[in-house]
Image 1 (cartoon, helix red, strand yellow):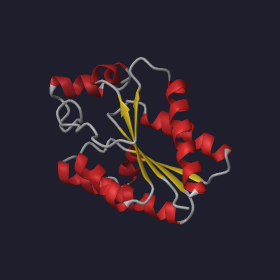
Image 2 (cartoon, rainbow, N blue to C red):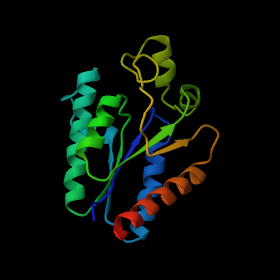
Image 3 (cartoon, one colour):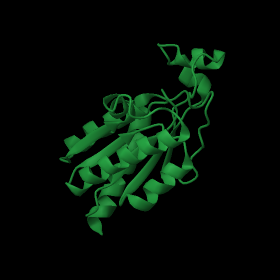
Image 4 (cartoon, rainbow, N blue to C red):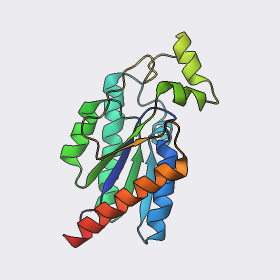
Length: 177
């Protein structure tokens, strides 16, 4: 059975990590070995190696893809949370990662900004923060997401239930084939 690689993409503060953690808890309850690879934490651990240009964001995505592939090869279900703003990176993942499942966490910039306790969105909107995806840098809406979850005005538990049901269904299909 090919282990799925679940990749959450969306703007900063759209709800990717919240949904991924709830999914991970549910899959662990089901008996799966699971690891959440949070793009922000991985980037912080690689402190200073990568900046925020398009090329560097693509490199970070490739690092996450490599880590996820290694985990899946070792019977762990990797769940990646990463803005992954470029279709090019998501297309690479779909080609190179067996079992790749893309979850687009769709949330407006306005809603994300209301969740921002650090004020980064406001600073980016004033021009004080460069390379901020969704404000000063583009976010390319996924063309081929396997699941699209809108977190604008929705509850985290409701969205998580939808994601969990989707992934459990895919795991059952993979086991049956």
